[in-house]
Amino acid sequence: MNRVSDMPEDLYIDVPEGPFPHMIINNFYNEKELKLIWQELDFYTAPKKLFEAKDYGGIVDSTNAKAIILDEVYGKFYRDVSNILTVNRKIFDSGVLDVLEDIHQSCRCATLVDEDITKLRYYHDGDYYDPHTDHTTAFLAFSYFYKEPKKFQGGELEFPGYDYELECVNNSTIIFPGWVEHGVKKVSIKESDYYEGMGRYCVSNFMYYKEKVDKNDKDM
Image 1: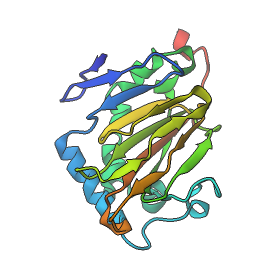
Image 2: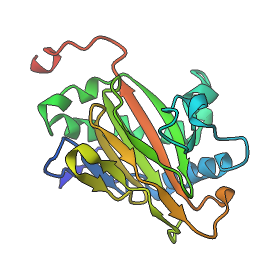
Image 3: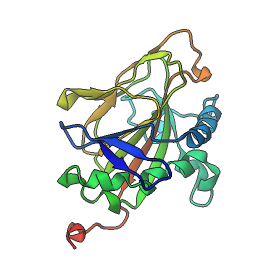
Image 4: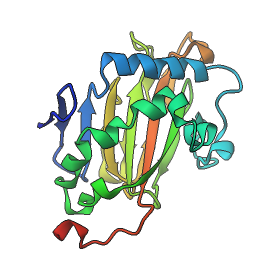
């Protein structure tokens, strides 16, 4: 277990052995941050707030879960209006990417990431995402949220090429390279209206290199 204490509260990072480089941070957001996140999650769990895959850059015919790209809503100058876009800077400011760099050689430029896109996705009864690879993305950070007590089943993050899957624990974040094939198993939930918000939320950060990264940068 790796400990990161650059933030006011300590973070403990789990780095599983194989089958590909990844790490898991449980209880990533503190109580104050969670309150801000849920204010926005509740706001978007309403009619006409979330969109189908063809309208948010999802893989059409591979998912039926609705989502929204928060960066496109708030643009460059109004990001601070969004609680989520403000709070999730913690991924970049807390030191977790420094830990990621030490996991595997393929991750050694993680702290040089200089651009990201944030999607908010919601999975309710029957929603899924078929296995796929985000080829143009350097790293993916998935943060999971749901109301407790948990009412849904399924929704595990699956990695079929590795015969591996992860339960999506409330307020946990997993980070791994974009070349790893992944998908979301179908969610099942009974006696719950879609807009009641009792399903599975995922705040996804797609991280890129806007500027060219020199592979020798980390050797200097």
